Image 1 (cartoon, helix red, strand yellow):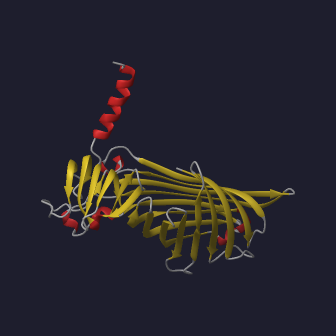
Image 2 (image 1 turned 45 degrees about the vertical axis):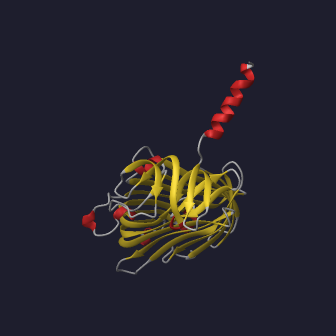
Image 3 (image 1 turned 30 degrees about the vertical axis):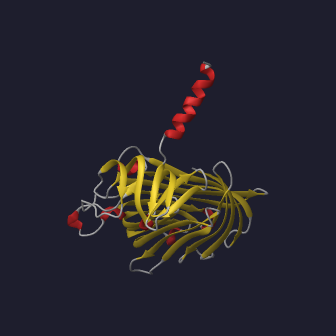
Length: 334
């Protein structure tokens, strides 16, 4: 007997004998493939005939797999071969996540980020075309998160500096364990600290330093869509080239981050904003926003088109309140 021919044939027979995962729908349809994970109340199944299928959990009657990890809302991690969604669970834990990422159940962390090189057409205090560098980074663990974002903008033409601006903000967030004493689902709430530094030579701003606590709510957190809103009190120090404009004040600070993939991940819409509103005094408003579309390319590279607004309600003498920037970026994400 030719063993060289028998061995590959045996492997093929074994592979075809292994049972595929099955998803039984409430309408009687049966889908076979590999159960990957659940995301945004949907189950993702990879099939050989239709690629990745996204199925609403509400339409599923039963899931039968070789082995699947199930994470309940009380943070118990179960290993099961069959999940019958038509039956009432025998526990008060009802938030089911199929094959969660390890950081969700307390093992390791998730790191993601974006670095962009931007070509800008700017109107306002500066009128020039320039190259700028920016980055956004996030390290996520089960109960806490570290975020860092920054921009470095510098342009010099014919020996004249037309822009010299830096901005850096860091956030630490803590997501408490869910507890019945809260009276609501605490997993989406978080609290933490925010600190930021800003410098803008052409706006005569030597330094704007902001520090304070915040409370936030994470409405969505997934690849498909993210949305958070946070706010809190902040201590603000401003140092201008004109010493008469220097001041310290308390402010109400807020931040909003939103992104969502559209048209089967053809593009991603995003909007981010931060704001400071002085409490008392002149009720000064400082506001930044970034709004645009990202277009995934290949190998993690992305192209973006963006409108950035930078508003200072009390700028240095002779400076504009609003800078508008049109960004065309090439970047890398992971």
